Length: 318
Image (cartoon, rainbow, N blue to C red; front, side, top):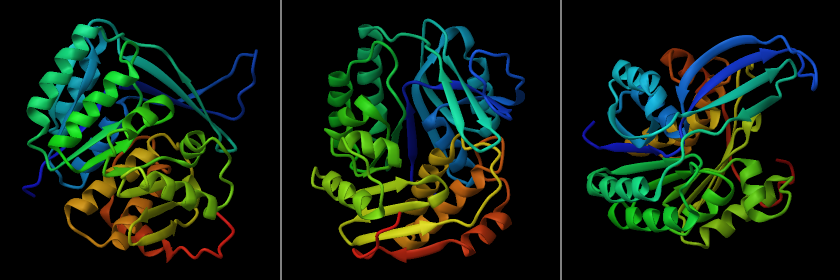
């Protein structure tokens, strides 16, 4: 494949993933460790893309003091590394999955990006990102990076690379939207926070997605966990729902969806096929301890079981 993809993760993390029957506050909890992974939204996206056979370059910030796990990951996966190393440590996120499937996150703080480090990243990254056909900007902002500075960088990036895939939340999501990315992928909660109201049924979600599109965003894909995903664009809205899956960890499920979306778009597949693929990859990700596509035959089997249909305004259930 000759088309080039880059992912940007400004605030990566080591994900310490564990399973606990029930989290009891104020008490000692015995946790079964599932794994410690060098991760971050854009890095997870890159791993999925590599498993699907796409060459990908990654960039963002890494803490100097504990970068080895990331460097090893990039080497093992054959991922081109353009990360900028800054003083300090990359954060650790603890993610506990309870027996009922609920995931509780403890996101610790990490390095702080100085204004000088940000200016270097902004100018340097724009010097090489323009060569890529698609750029995925994913995740939160690290300490020290201001929303306005991020918006300005996104606007400059948008001018160089029309196909920006954007996946973030809260203030970073609002800041990035000022650049009118080509495709955004919020989950239900992120979309509710942006809309400032609950979005309990599918019609509400589609309406909020249409409001995003009025800001110049061509495609809005909403990830809905076990309920699948919704794709809203100028040509209409489609809903995809996966079959029931055994849940080991939901960590990285949304990132897996983004990776599969990018792959399908690169392959110029139909929107219906891409949504089916992305929903299947996301569904499979919850049944494993780490992000990635390890079994193409199993993926094809799950794709065949995806319930895919156009959205009808009369539908009332999400």
